[in-house]
Length: 106
Image (cartoon, rainbow, N blue to C red; front, side, top):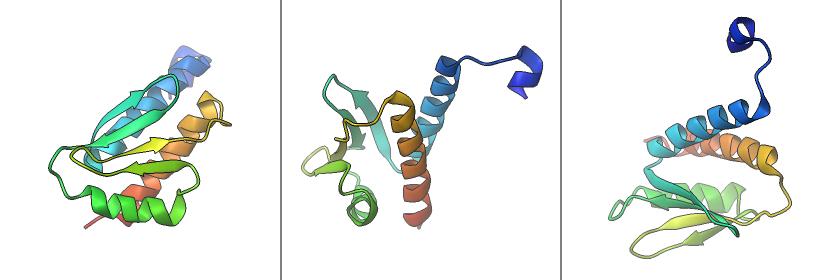
């Protein structure tokens, strides 16, 4: 619909839409923050929330090669696959968030 109305959409706009989608799916999984540093991308869960355990189980089943788990007061997981470009990472995260939200529904 956007292309019909505004013509061709540049890739950065698609990237922003993908980021918004990933963040909305992440909220459903009780992920409080997504932070990108020069070396990694960190997905941090809400403090004192036990829902991360179900997500961690699914991550260990399907994504253990690309993600490191961090336990403790602020549980999180860190994306470590440095071979992907930005568009490939966004596609990976969209697929990951979709898969996690389907598998961890109560």
